[in-house]
Amino acid sequence: MTHPVSERPLRPDLPFLLRSPAHFLALGLGSGLLHPAPGTWGTLMGIALYPLLVMGFMAIPGLNAGFFPALVLLVCLLAFLLGCRVAQRTGEALGVADHGSIVIDEIVAIWLVLLAVPQSWTGWLAAFLAFRFFDIVKPWPIRWLDARVKGGFGVMIDDIVAALFAIACLLLLQQFVPL
Image (tube, rainbow, N blue to C red; front, top):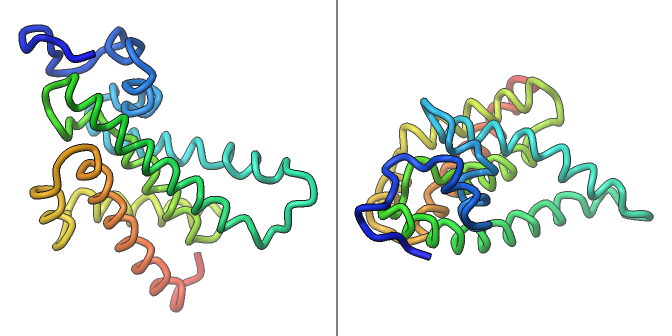
């Protein structure tokens, strides 16, 4: 449900978060309401949710560990598609297509980066720092995508590209420094 312009919150609050499952997901289960730097809070929420994702796969009887990366990628693809939809709906309700409080994009992107690093505190710290760097600095083509690709897909895609930049840098770094 969209709101008349006069009722659109410039900064979403708890009632807005709970008004719709789309808002709840787009705002990262509430992490997007935290300020300053809601994108950083959303990334931290993604890191906090990642072990639950891993434990969910580990609970599948007879699952070969070799399938784990493929399953995480599948979940990321599905979460990306869902993220496009919920970001679109929430952006429309807020009146700002890529509102800073929409952090589903950070959550999905950090899952991709976490998949590429060792499952250690140093690997996860490196993943967090590398992703936040590329998400904030937005080198080309990330900034270009952020400025030109609109809607829910636009919200999601620039963070996925930032994740790919972070993954490339971390894979290169791991050739010289163990994480």
